[in-house]
Image (cartoon, rainbow, N blue to C red; front, top):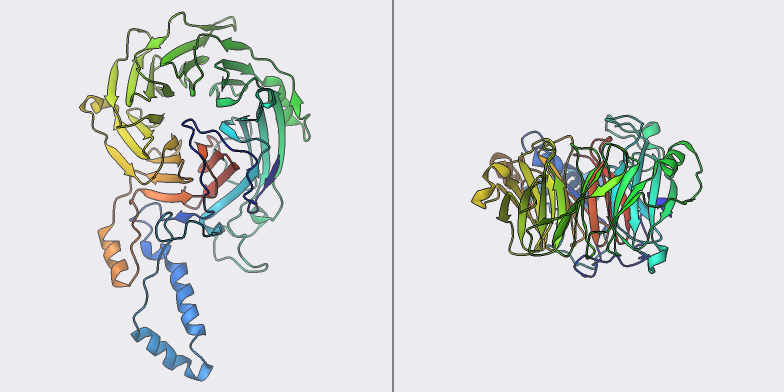
Length: 492
């Protein structure tokens, strides 16, 4: 593996297998950022740099210095073309090559891997919470999809020396007008990667870390098995050794043998330690628990109610016996884990497959979903029986592949899609009619964007998952067929 903060060469190491068998499309390396709060950051500020750039170009084309004042007067009287902002998929040649704008990110680093990873999760560490200083160090674990069954692995990673990259586009010696610019945070040092691989039988459809114990990991195998791993020994080596051995011989602590087919749905309870739920393509959900003696036991009976493949599972952030699931049968279901006879609540959430769900850890009655037609919806569980979503976020043009709420800001969520975009949304933002009127008066084109859409990240193909780091506020990780990204935007 090789990690590099420079632009990737866009050569695919392998093709990531979509859950639906859809091929990847090429994405453009570009990001659009808007002010996070419409009332606090005006749209004029967002377009300020572009406006200055246009004025400077007009001034440079004005001629000799003697005619500069006259030219400027003419320019003031002449009609100006509206300042435009790039919007993915609108008015741009899809084959155009676009460069990333580093000023839209506090940090952006990209890593290529030998085999694509369909799934990953951040590993908790002992470096402290609420870390905001650069350079950063983060730990993660991902699962590969190799060309042969025996070549797959769980890959534990330590990414360090993750410097701020916001000022990378500036010329050397240029002073930044940002209060956070310069200093050791912006050193142009290469990030460092250390990793330890553990052999995994079959491709890794999904991997999840137990929130109460970061050394316990569950994985969904393409061979139709769910494995539970105790990775305490290699994790300790990764955390303590500058150059750990690249391979570790660890066997699963437990294998769930109840499933009749492979699957993707997998989640640990954040309330009850050692409780795992897994769902398969045979419409079944099984619960596995750790006993007081440390053994793992899977229930004799599963949870039956879905009429199609179970695509995702989320445990309640506040109730130990409650979890949710979504399915190809177009429904979202809420379950009481003490009853196996059927779900407690059910709603038809889409006119197509519901691929992913996310339970808001800060507001326990809010649940987000993403479906095969690109719809992002937010549901209030208190009124779920009405069948009406309280939020409908329309932007993605292809299937939503992942969604997750921000752990620090309960109104913010991130989503990934097969349209090669990762989006960040703030449900608290409303359209600012006064600011838009001012923009129109100044000849600034108003972007055709949902007001809640605050950031678009691109540059990866066939994005599979997006996760927020639990200990580094605003830091986001994504995995795709073309590699792994870790970044922090200027407005998260």
